[in-house]
Length: 192
Length: 263
Image 1 (cartoon, rainbow over the protein chains, first blue to last red):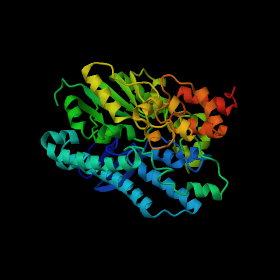
Image 2: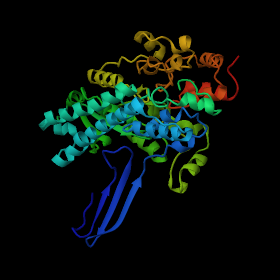
Image 3: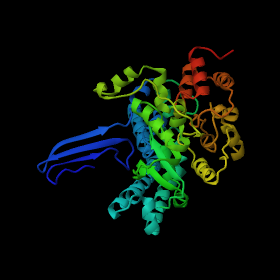
Image 4: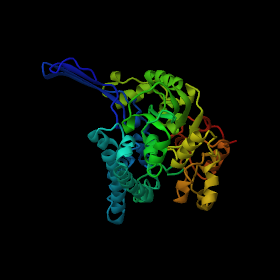
């Protein structure tokens, strides 16, 4: 960060920390008023929308998970719901409950990560959760235990914490067989 | 932090953050590991103080921009040991699907203003740009293999990571073969171990997220997939996901796409 005077200054953050994806921020303040703001997202493009074309309807949940390793379930779920909407399938009962549990697991993990490992050090004046643990180990351990609980939930229902797999067809596309019977679509490839 | 601890950095290139998150997901080991090393640069965890050099760099992601092609050279120069973590860094990742297509077309259909988006025509693994000391496979990597790698590094020994196939892990786990018994197509015979045969354990075929095993016979598997009734375009697609540009998977998918490999 660079400062000129209290009323006129420039803030430049070259790398935004604690987020998935890379970005930078530039804020110019003149005479006490914000004059210019630039947010630069330099996270390289990966083109998911382009390479999803031509894929079988069973494939997007496994592929879209890879958009983000911190919230893969959100992307899997979005793909699953889009496909189900296209096929006119409604999911309820125990299966819907299992999906919610899977989602809750991701939320618990992600929120514990954010609160304990990313935000708390900032609020308490530490560089990182590691540095925070040197002075407040029980608090960081509590955060890690909470985080692990969320991961365990995703692990039990989805098979693993990052990019869970046991979702796409067996758990989350119960109507896949009906959909195939109703419409002439391509057979799924290996592993689907 | 005392200065005699080896400094460790975590770098990100084109990727999803999932492999570096695996380090933070080592809830039971994280504080212990952090006590043994000086975590010096780890943007996702908020550590931004770049120091002169690092004893160990963990590199996630593939090279897809000119800036990143330059940055990986700097990372290599600043690192005594460089380990790539995951399918993106080791094989180019799913974003390497552009390598089989035209990136300009990809860019024009995804972005309203493609002229703002800088990208290379290919997504390439770190080893295509700099010397790599060890590659950890997986999309995502295995927590156990990551902890083993860091532990081996701290003790100055080679990490004990097997290059065998998922089939070996299936046997250890006592899985019934999904292909032989159930007729389900499976990439297990050519896929690197590390997931503990996760998918076959749940009666799904392996979809290759650990990339090729050390020794593979992909043409033979292609014959078997065809015998099982898979169409060639389905075989091409299943080989073209997270490790599409790994040599063995790429060669196999290109052969099938060209109508070869059945002889």
